Every structure is written in C-alpha cells, then in structure tokens.
Length: 72
Image (cartoon, rainbow, N blue to C red; front, side, top):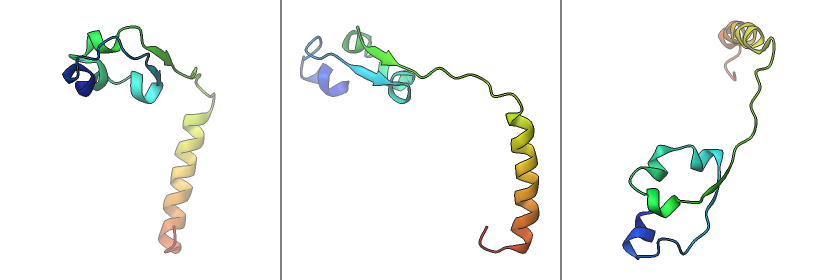
C-alpha cells in the first residue's frame, strides 16, 4: 500500500483479499484511501463441539508419549 501511495496510484487497483490479508489492521491503517472498495473473503468459522476437550486430552497423551519417544 505504501508503494501505491508513493506512486500516486490510488484508485488504480481492485484489491481482493483473503482473511489473512484483509483482517490485519497493518494493511489498512493509514492506507484507507488505497484499500477503499477492497473485496475481502473470510471463511465462516463455527465452533466444533467437543474440540477443546479433545485437544486437552491429546495434549496430555502427547506429553506422556514425548517422555518415552525422542522423535515426538
């Protein structure tokens, strides 16, 4: 965006951003004119029932295995 601003090319581009790009204030802060009209695509994120419990159990299992297996 700094290059767009520096080159006086504001309005010359159509920006399409994924969630990794467009959700960051680093891109837009101070560059509002340059990113105006950006199309941003972000996948829908729904909580997965039981995921936290699964992850916590898996972590405990991993910790136990790591003590016996140097490759983990």
